[in-house]
Every structure is written in structure tokens, then in C-alpha cells.
Image 1 (cartoon, rainbow, N blue to C red):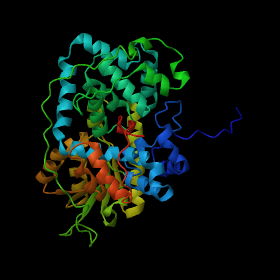
Image 2: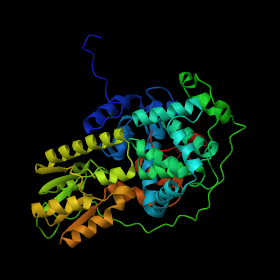
Image 3: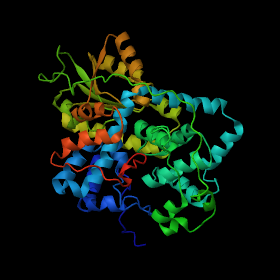
Image 4: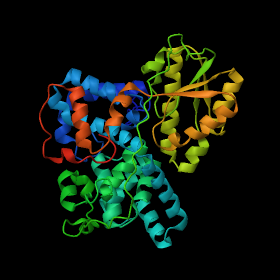
Length: 440
């Protein structure tokens, strides 16, 4: 060591500037993604490793797709575009069926408090990397130490949990949600349901030794311990739990922003802009025209503790949140306030609004998930204090999410016509119909 070695770049950029640099590096080779994306090799060079940044919207799906189609022919990068849009499909699907999220979280709590002790002990052993299949245990250690797993490894891991260990899918989904830097309520929950055979009823994803041996780097399979448990002839689908059909709700349309022609919502007064971890690119939306009195971010330690988030995920969230607030502060040229005091989210919004003399807050509405669950409490607390909050939604989400009324490929046809109106080719009958879990 000379002392002059460069610090290796963060494999999962936590700021917009770093994420854009990673994307510029990947863009010239993006056309190889379709052929190489399923290969699971150390370092994951064949995929973007931008899923945490996209999850937090340090960069948006819309701008990534836009730059792809400016740089490459649609046919050359169609698979990557499709995988990017999967995230929007999952978001829209869950937004239309929020009861699926509520039922999943209730099942996690039920299992924690009422689950069979022997089952819970086995679950803990597998989650500690002591399940007895060397390659799967290696993936477990990678997840815990890095906050990431390749998408194909996620499918193998989830399939092993459900169909080999016969453990409840909800506990496995919660384990991923607590550790993954890119953990998204929609793609994580619905991806696990898909592996179990619940999302497309009866069509489960089974981990097979032949598939691992085809796509895994040989170094990951150097220890063959336990691979016999994944033999193609041995693995079979776990019985599906009884479940009522998901109830669909009507789409609640929101304009991307209130009338900001005067710099603040109609009616005047002093307004603040709440910047949260669900969307850290607020200055790139129509809200960028606003002239807020103050920008506020809140690290809700209570909610994070209740979810049991891993320290690595907390660190990523805090760094991304600070980056989003700082960028927004430069864009809007106004005061910023970062609240990390341990008070609840609603309490912080009320307190700062009162201290600043605000009519209320404007914010991008969180999708279904833990932050979305906080919306009724936020609205009620502000109303009791004589204040309000105005919710907005990106036009991209407003256009795409309502289309997630049924299966992905109907959704994809509609999205593809918007993105590339000249393409009329039907979907290919290969593994492009395999969604996987969250993201490339």
C-alpha cells in the first residue's frame, strides 16, 4: 500500500451526483444488459446497481428511460426499459390494492407474536446464514453485509425460503425489507408473493440446482454443501395459504401540483415543502416552480425502529435524505430544516409549521407503504392545529400507475406505446416474462 490508492466508489451511490456518474458509466454498455443480466457474479458488473438510488428517486425511472432511448435504439435496450418499468407496475398495482400491503404487515406481526416457536427458530437460523445450503447462506451474508442481492439471487433465496424450507413468505419478505437498501413496499411485497405463487395464482418460482449452476459464477458454488436440496427433481411448490382475492380500489387522481403561478398554492400565505425519502427529486417535478418558506426533512426514528431497519439501510436513507434536502435548498434558495430529534413525523410537521407561521405543507404523496400509512395521522394532526397539507403526484406516476389494473404485459404494452410508438412487435416467449423481485 502506498497511501495514494483511490477510495473505491460506493457500489450503491447514495447521492444524485454519484448516481448520475454511475449511470453515465453504465449507459454505453446498456445494450448488453439483456444478454448478461441473469449472470450472478461478484461485484455485479452486468447490472446498474442503481436500484437504491431509483428507490429514493435520487434519479427517476423517467430520466433513465429517456436517456436510454436517446442513446440506443429501443430494440437494443428494450429489456432494460422493461425492467425499469416493472417498478412502476408494482407501485401502481399496490396503489390500486392497498389491502394487500395491510394484510402482509398484519401477518408479519401475527407470526412474530403467535408463530410456532420451532418455525421461528428455523427462520432465525436461515436469516443468520446458517440454513445449511452453502450458496444460499453466502447470499444471506452478502445481503446482511452489503444491503444488496442480485435480482436472480433474490429469486433463488425467496424460492428456497418458501418452497424448500417451507417458511412463511411474509417473514422472508420482512427480512428483505429490513436489509435491502432498495427495499420498496410494492416490489418487495409483490415479488415475494409472485415467488410464492400468490401474485399469479399457482405460478410459483422454484429454485433449481440446474438454474444456479447455469447462472452462478463458479466461485459462488465452490462449496456444494446442501445443493442436493435444490435438485430439480426434489423441489416442489409449497402449499398456498388461503387468501381472499385482492380488493381493488378506485384510482385517486392528483394533479402534479396545485396552482403555483404565484409561487404558492392558491389563497396565498406562507407554505413549506416537505421533502421525504420516498421522492428525493422534488425540484425536478412541477413543484420546482414553488417558492416555499422552508424545506423540511424528517428522519422518523420511531417508524424506522418499529420496522426494524438494519443499520446499513438507515445510513443509506440518512445520506440520501441529506442529499435531497441540500439539492432542494440550492434549487429553491430558501431555508432548510432537517429534523432528527426522535419526535414523530406528524409532530415535527406541526411543530415546524407553527414555528414558521405556515398555512401548511405541500408534498409529493407517498405511495402505499410505511410512509403512506402515516398520511391519515399527518392530516389529522395538521387539521387539529388549523393547518393543512396539499398532496401532489408526478405526472409520470399519474400516467402509468393507473394502468396496473391487471397483469404486467397489458401494462407494458400501454407503456411501450408511450415510450416507443413505432414498435409493434409482440412480446417474446422467453424469460422476459420472469419479473423477479425489485430491480436490475
